[in-house]
Image 1 (spheres, one colour):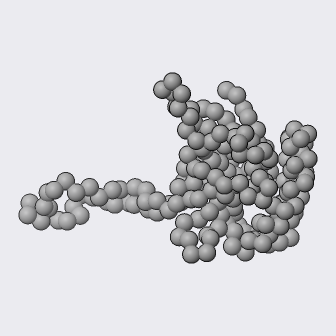
Image 2 (image 1 turned 45 degrees about the vertical axis):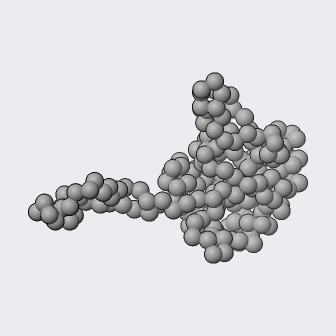
Length: 194
């Protein structure tokens, strides 16, 4: 399996999407570079923002669980109660949170967020190639300011391992939106072909 570090590059160099070649489908999973948690896959399109430092990914609320299937029978005519024998446990979940088992964390205030960012930058920088380190150092301040401007509206998530040295995933609702938008640090991710 070949690992490819993504982020901090132009999107032309990164192919995300289902790749169909010779009737074989490859799926790309996106992992946290520092701790290895799976955070995203190529089935969720992204938009680069803040000079490629961040990805925005649209999440969706979905219903998970029991599905009402109409088979054309009339339960009341057949002497049955309408909901007899069915224990509907349908719940609404956000697709990205559910698929990648993201764990919500308490919100940060400005001081806590800046402390996290300093530690994250210190841990991530040596893991990047020299060229990516320069891009990261050049643009991370802008990405940090962008996130700070939304801090009061952000939800904070970590990967399944709940490792606090990994990357945070942020979610917020754009004005008038009913579905959340997720934000990922691109330099802290690596793409793995499955």
